[in-house]
Length: 82
Ligand SMILES: [Zn+2]
Image 1 (tube, rainbow, N blue to C red):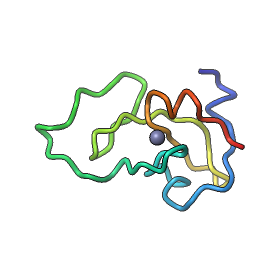
Image 2 (image 1 turned 90 degrees about the vertical axis):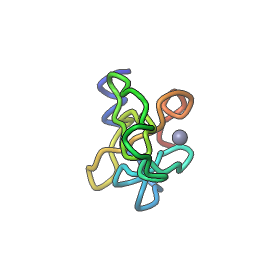
Image 3 (image 1 turned 180 degrees about the horizontal axis):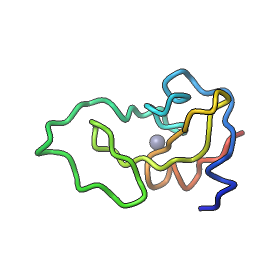
Image 4 (image 1 turned 45 degrees about the vertical axis):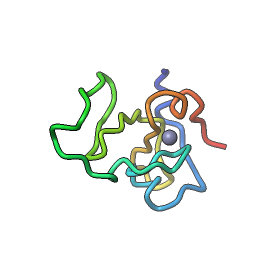
């Protein structure tokens, strides 16, 4: 992942994607379902895990400058703004 990639500017995101609480690719929520702590997976280095336990990778910024995330794995691999 390059610096340029994480600074990519995304447009056409919904409100949740733009504020980093939904995957920019598949719209999966990083907040729901909210798992109890004993069910949360081990955090993966370089990713952020929210209450749902889904590992999320920063993939750029929204037009307002907030960080945009995608699920670690196929979403992050394909994440690139249109
Ligand atoms: Zn995703």
